[in-house]
Structures are given as C-alpha cells and as structure tokens.
Length: 178
Image (cartoon, rainbow, N blue to C red; front, side):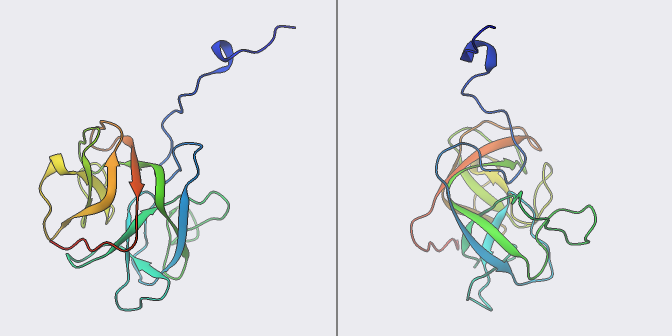
C-alpha cells in the first residue's frame, strides 16, 4: 500500500468557501448578538450595533451613523431561516454570530482588489444585493451609504459576485460615521 503524501492528497491552499464561512484554520474571535429588527441578516455581510436597544443586539446597516460590529458568520450547527424553508439567514430575534477577528469568505458586492479597505454598502451592490454587503474603497469613496468596516482588508482580488476573503481585526468600539 502506498503512503499518502501532500503531493497526492492535497495542499495547504483552501478552496473558496461559502459566504460567511471562516476562511482558514487560525483562531477566530466571534461574538453573538440578537437580530432586533424584522429585516433578516444574510451571511458574510456587515452587522451593526442596534442603537435603539444596545444590549447584545444587532441589525442590518441602514444609516450613516451606524457602528459596525463585524461580519456575520455562517453557523453550520443550527438552521437559521426567515421562512423556515429554504431562505437561509438570521431572522428577527435569532442569535447572529459575528466575526470580529479573523478571515472570512464573503460574496463581493462589487469588484475588489487585494489589500483594499472593506466598505459596507447599505443597499448592497450588483454582485450581492444584501443590505450590508461588502465592497471596496476602489468601488467608491465612503459616504452615507458606504461605510468603512474598521480594521478590515480584502485579501483577494475578487470580481463582483465572486467569493473572496476578508480579514478583520477589531480593537474596541470604532465609530464609522463620515
């Protein structure tokens, strides 16, 4: 019987994952908040602090005064669904895991370049229309609908709608208003 080697079994490169999936085997820091509003939160998008009910809640981005908590994580151990059938996201009152430190796969709302700063787009973009979908500074300047995601950069050059990797490192609370 032949002995397995890395040349025949695989390599250290991970294939592109699903939006919201942790991207590597390094330790990641994830916090959990509850979705306080009726708008469901998708996987791999920015989640913001719910200013109306600050205690352990979050919501989708809808204002230039939002505080970004991090990027939503796909949780494989429980089903999160707004309709209980096929739509997979975090509905109102569901626990939302949010990455604050680590690398994560996301679906790009617009074309990005490696090492670009990450932008959260209120209404999404052509490649990902979910609220809080992620784009890059190359797609446009920060504004009332395009908030900088503090401490985050794209690690991949990604086409609009493609799956790329974002690295985020959050230190304390950061205000993202323009």
